[in-house]
Length: 365
Image 1 (tube, rainbow, N blue to C red):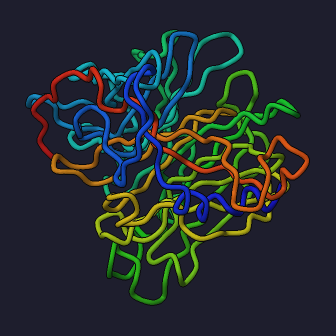
Image 2: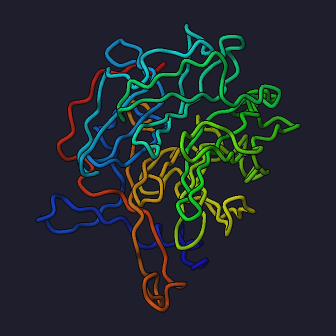
């Protein structure tokens, strides 16, 4: 089991990527991954599965000259994605958010037991625009409008640089809910790549905060550090996303500076949700399957569908992935008695570019 998870990266590179056209077509191999939505700019994607399909949410953008705080996309089958254009999941800003330049980043939506939805997000403080903190907004509909009426941010470690990149996780076994996020230490760094490669390096820990299983917002206890940046991570670790595979907690995250080709998708593994987590090599780096600066992977809670971004000609486009069973040479599948020798690998979802809507005009902020 442990070996199965540890070999995610090795198997992904060794097995090649299997893509298919529609179900009736013959499976074929390709060396490069392709973005969905014709490369539509859609950075820091988060994904949720509902009864009618998958919904993705993205960092703010300007679409057809209109400011969109939270971009959206939808697919009924994880094959063809429909970009929602100027439709905004959170059209109104909370009082604590800087109105002129809110910089809504990395939204993540989770469904609650009563069927409603909560969106975790980060935004610039009205009182201190250079600092991001976390907020939450709620809606009865997965596509919003999400509303946050709070006068102050939800989680805001200002002295440590603020907080970004929140993601929800439901630990289904014990029925406990968590939010994981990054302390944005590089925002108060001493310079260099992404503000934090000049010594002394400021810590950018990933923290785990238990929250109410019912409403997703009431904090339970204090946050727990589950990972932090080291010398091999460049300026930071960020973009955490938790999932549960083969009896292990797998923490996907990114390291290195997002604005450079060194940005990556990495992962760490633990027997317990609170850690300790052990880092294993990056899963995707520039050059892997034709990607440039891949990062920000998010996995649907307790599922096998994932999204991430990488640079394309139109900004940071969304790519899709599916966690699947795959045998390693000399090993059985993870469902066989030799499961410990098998591996899960990530492959691009089939039909990624079939039936997408034309790309809207997008300008980078």
